[in-house]
Image 1 (tube, rainbow, N blue to C red):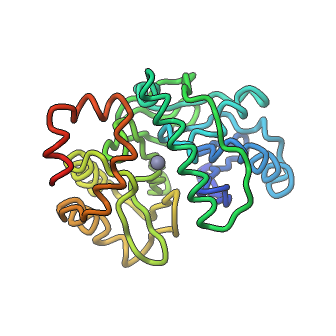
Image 2 (cartoon, rainbow, N blue to C red):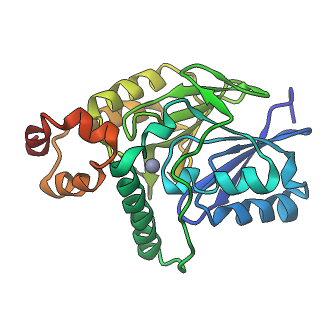
Amino acid sequence: MINNSPIIHKIQGYISYIYLAEYSEKILLLDSGCANDARVIANFCKNILKRPITDIKLLAVTHAHPDHAGGAARLRTKYNIPVAAHRDIDLWYANLTGFIQHKIDCFLAQFVRFRIHKKFKPVLYSRFLIPDYELADGDKLPGFEDWCAFHIPGHTLHDLALYNTQLGTLYSGDCIIHLKGKLNLPLPSLFLSKMKKTYKKLSRLTINNILPAHGEKIVDEELKDVFDRMIYKTEKPRNETNKLIHLLFIFTPQVWKRHFRHIKSWIQH
Ligand SMILES: [Zn+2]
């Protein structure tokens, strides 16, 4: 390790990739995967890193979805790992409609699991994260000052991207999907104008590589215009199927309250 820069490890989680930043004296966990991934992370530490899982001194959660925040409660309860997330994360699944959205999202996680031919494992988890550290845009991660959290709304209103200033590595969470060499917007992309601003903001960083939660690492040639290509995608009109699919995600209070008056025109555009 040069200048105590971390070594980044990638774990194939139940649905998403999970990343670990390993230092000589500590480990940072970037998202927790699904509820059933807590055991996968523990096994990775034990069998691959040959280190106790308690060396993980912080779990940074990018957003509340089941494949990112699902394992957090278990990791905190079982191994005492503190959790950092955006300060508004627990607004996402608040109230009765948030409860409904949470159940829909867990069901959709199982649907994705079925589509990628994985065996059934439970993904249910507490819908409230209650972070030990509440983060705002530009905050450094507690105990990991070489990592900066950027607020990147678009997929949800509380998404974070995590940027290592030494390596120029951006863990982009769900704001970029990069499967089979193709860039895509995440599903849902509920706030397209915010998403566009997010990409413009990230494009100003000095980035050597991007680690998406879904898909392959983005490096070299693809880095040059990645954000321009994502911005272009936010400007394309939604097709009918995409509009219908987005109706599955409108139960979150922060979504339906925002769109209540305009929901008809929102569906039509
Ligand atoms: Zn997500």
